[in-house]
Image 1 (cartoon, rainbow, N blue to C red):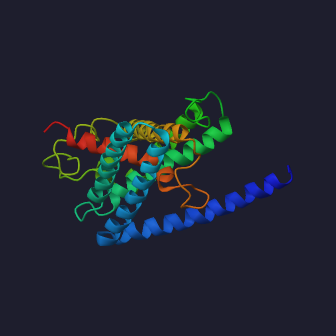
Image 2: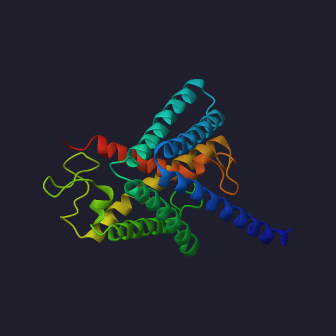
Image 3: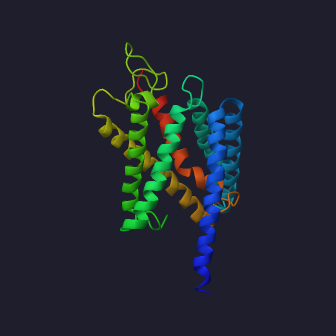
Length: 257
C-alpha cells in the first residue's frame, strides 16, 4: 500500500499540471480576445461557482432560512466579482488591469504554497484550514509584491499606470474616479507601494480561501466540486480572487469623490 502512494502522488501531479495548462490556455485566450468571449467565459465560471455555492450551503445548513440567506449572499458576492472582471476588461483599460489582478492573486497562491511547504511553522487557523501557515501568508505577500513590482516595471510608468487610468493634469484616477485615495504613486517609493498593495491582496485572498474552507468543512466535503481534474471545482480555483475583487469593488465604490 505504501508503495502505491508515490505513484498516486505522481499521477495527481500530472493531472493537476495538465488541468492547469488547459485552464490557463482557456482563460488566457478569453482574456486576450475580450468582448463577448470574455463575457461568456466570466458568465460560465460565475454560474459554476454559484452552483457549487448552493450545493455547499445546502449541505452545510439545515435551516431553510439560513440557506436562503447564504444563497442570496452568494449571488451578490459572485455577481460583484464577475462585474469587476468585466469592468476591468473593457476597451478603456485593455487587459492590463485585470491581468495584473489575476497574476497578483496567482502570485499569492504560488508564494504561499512554496513558502508553506518549505518553511512550515505555526498554523493560522488549523480548525478551519490545517494547511495554512503564517510562513505561507508571508510567502503570499512576497509573491504578490514581486508580481506587482514586475508589472509596474513592465509597463514602465509605475504601478499607477497598470492599475490606474488618468492624465498628468488631473492627477491619477482610480478606474476613472478621481482622486485616487489608495494609490499614491508620487508619495511613496514604488516598491513600498507594491509591498503595501501585496499585503492587502495576500490577506484578502487568504481570507477568501479561509471562508471557502470553513464552508466546505461545515458541508463535510474536501472540494467544492470535481469539474476540474486534480483541482476540484470552480469555487476552489477562484475563492481568493473573488475576495480580492469584492473588496476592490468596495474600495472603488466608496472612495471619496
